[in-house]
Amino acid sequence: SRFKELAARLGLSISVKEIDEDEVYSKKPYSGTPYIISVIGTDKPGIVHRVSELLFSKGINITDLNTKVVPGEETPVYTMILEVDVPHDIDMDALEEEFSLLEREMAIDVDIKEIEVLEL
Image (cartoon, rainbow, N blue to C red):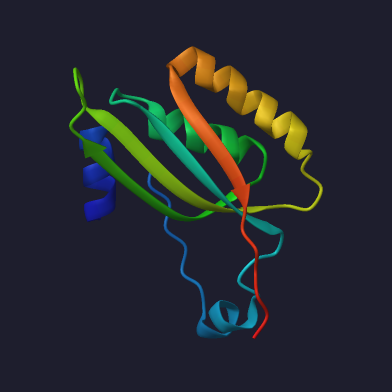
């Protein structure tokens, strides 16, 4: 398949799962608590990988992700905004501490804010 060829050429792991229509429309938008995570730092390889790896290790689902590189005074600045679904049993203080370690290691700034969900 084309995915296998692309994965082999780029050294990627690609997983595709078919879901049925009932599954798509029967689920609530969030099973946990929604948060916005913003990441800003000098553009360098590995930012998306390390942030998504940390979220995956905690069972946190990324529901939306946007990135942009903007010119900086000396070097380009990488910005990433993630919308995530955090399971209710996650210790947010511990998660923020792990992100603090990642901030120091990668010279990035991470901000985590809970999204207020309004029921209509």
